[in-house]
Length: 184
Image 1 (cartoon, rainbow, N blue to C red):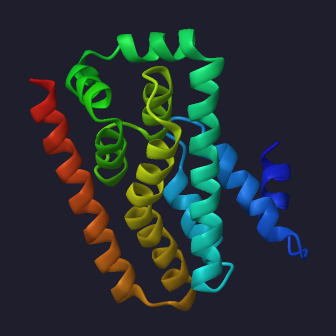
Image 2: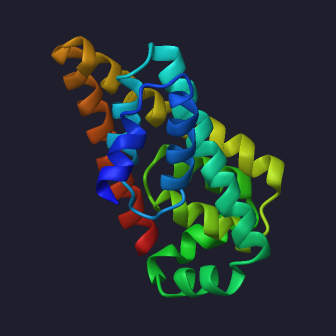
């Protein structure tokens, strides 16, 4: 299985971008998936804009698919996931009062795993267009950073990679702080 995945990811055919798109879409539906690593890897194989587009479209597509699945089919499973996590109470309240803002904040500041945001927004009936808009706007800064890091790594620009790593670390620490505040 691992070799099959590597063969698909490292494939050099004219449709490689399509394989990468589908892999990114599928992986973005899995909680705690290594999206940063995959996004950097994909971006390192293309010019910056193409890598960014594949990553953004792939992660957004996967997010929307999981959102729609949780809205229609996975309601019971998603509800089980949500109710087990007491620290999500305040976030759930925000989703119910302002779905767009909750999804946007969840995407920009890593408070909840991306797949969790998709499930929560789906079961709490966030408007589809609000979800998509918040997902695109919220994912853009981090996917941009991951794609730029991959592109810069391939080019050997370690100074830029270090700056991007500091940005991502700051986002992570901010997310932990917000999560602590919401867990009270």
